[in-house]
Length: 108
Image 1 (cartoon, rainbow, N blue to C red):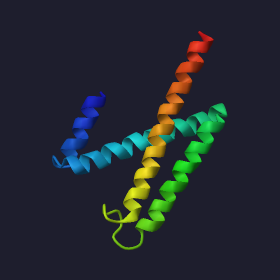
Image 2: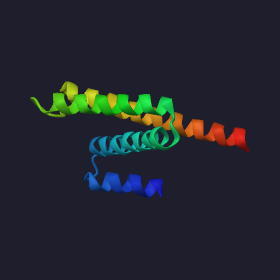
Image 3: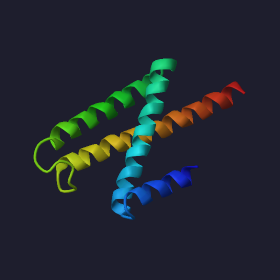
Image 4: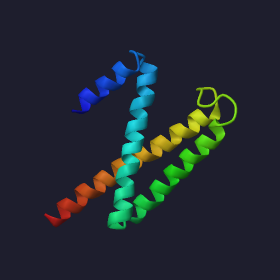
């Protein structure tokens, strides 16, 4: 299923690996943020709260910077700020999954 989704992103980008990598990074970062938001709001996970708010704040900063000048062109700082936000989302999502795994291992 994941492979099919990745193939669809590459196909939708017209075969451009550069544009496909941006789409894939967006979905991985956004997915991590959704997982952190779930852990924060429904399970009260403090680490997920900090990472989720940091990722969201960084993304909001990228949008503010991107609204001026070249937008999200690779030469513009907003591109790199958005990359940091997506990285925070991805790393936070991985940490949340590891914590879920460890909690289940401890309980079972």
